[in-house]
Image (cartoon, rainbow, N blue to C red; front, side, top):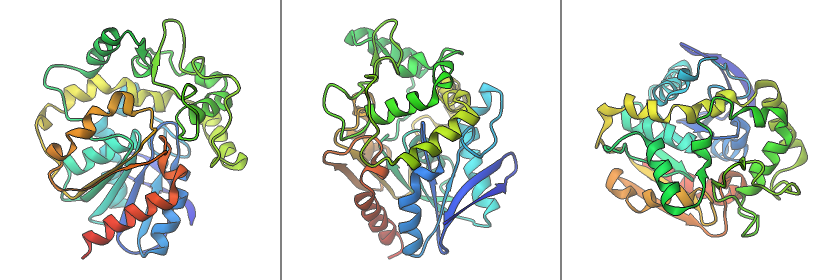
Length: 321
């Protein structure tokens, strides 16, 4: 397992990789890095695959464009297309977690010739809403339920990343704690925030690191986000409405390649992304696996590496038989 930089058409991307054989691309989410996939990179390499986990656009050792508009879904999919080509491959299986899951789903949706199968973790495919941009729907959901603002709505503000930048260590520690499966009920985040309360302020100050997160591993995140900041990662959220406008051509399109979806039973994201789980088969007709992992939270590939590795390798094995 090693780290290197690779120049694609538009970015210098840092990747973690190991192994040789069919390419498996591992796409991380917020607030993570390519090293979030270490357990999967090792397992895939041992099983005869070429595993590649990039730091995504705006993260870690990869380039960080300054413009908010540079973080749209078509840019993110394009980065993965460019990366596959730069690696000298003509096809791969794409795996995505958290924000990386929408990227992976859209890779398979837009370029099924290149991304021959998709494995999503934690966030199911969210089809484009024909009734209008998503942030308005999020606001309406919050008002109907009286739950406060969904944090994604708060992230639309141009200054939203500054609270994270002011103390990356505390912000990361709190987020990893509040979305972990080992965190007790009442201390997990629901994602909804009362008026005047930020995401980090909504999480207890005595939040501890999850049991799977070592001090050394946590230090990697703190160093990366202290150096690179949170603006690029939060800009992914600021493009939600722009993504809706840019993907009109995908309205009602289905994912036709083999697909799988795995989610933790105690993943707080299910509070606001869960309904899409029920209809996933309608949007991915070749859905071969849909698994809820008991007791697991949001950081599922790190919380339950053995189980995720088994499910992923079984899925990949079926593709080749």
